Image (cartoon, rainbow, N blue to C red; front, side, top):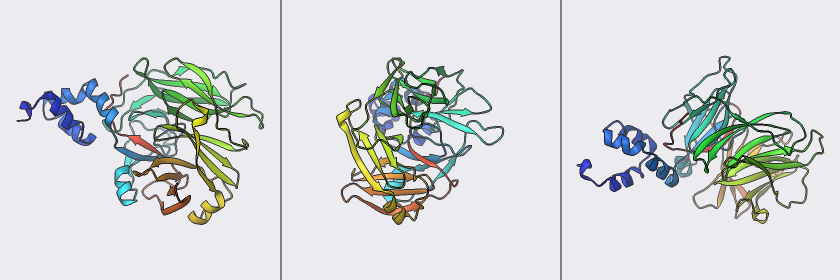
Length: 345
């Protein structure tokens, strides 16, 4: 009976199904496999997809990833919104470090993760939803013109909308950290020189044109803070933490427009510590993860096993402030979009 349905109607039905169901349906018939595996369907499904997972782990340089050295965990975000309970399940890595010490995520985009095992310098593209993981040959190397020296090499991964492809890049930087993918460009917080009082800048690398630029920062008063980048609902965010005082979260609502920077959250560290029973002796490393369905609350992740809601209207931390179970002691949180995107070499 299904074969008598118009192809357009079948694709419409498929577009409303979860990833796991579609993967099972691929095994039922050749025509369904061809439909679900077509590039047009995959792109449309990605465009219309709204199902996300919470991902956690200790990760190095990515907007929404997943690694705790050699362990990955995932939780259904829709279930979390309904129950305020995050139950994390371990994912199977496509590679393991020989020493069981280091496996890094270089970046995440459209449901693909770029994974690097430190005993093998060949990056791997991995789609946890479909479990595809081809090995890449190398990363493209570029030098950031806004830094006066090199402390270490930072990696980034994202999609090139111009060439309809994905790219892995290696960029030597000073103080570069938290590479974030937004609007087809990678972003880092960098310094002009290794001097401690050197101004921190937001450097961008366009994956389509392969050009570096500087992104204008918000016109906040005091720049003497620890700066980190993040992604919130597809918008670039900037977390400014003032030691033992407070932290601000800025969101760039319209990419590239300085006046669109909005101070979304401002929390005193003492208030956070009182509510969450945290010590003020160390930076709290709080980052925005996602909005609630009503957009009134922001889910914040804190880097030693805490999830909390911040109510934008009442300007307060709301419960539950919860400890994450089923994971390692320290982690970072992000959002992971489930997709059928093929991890091609």
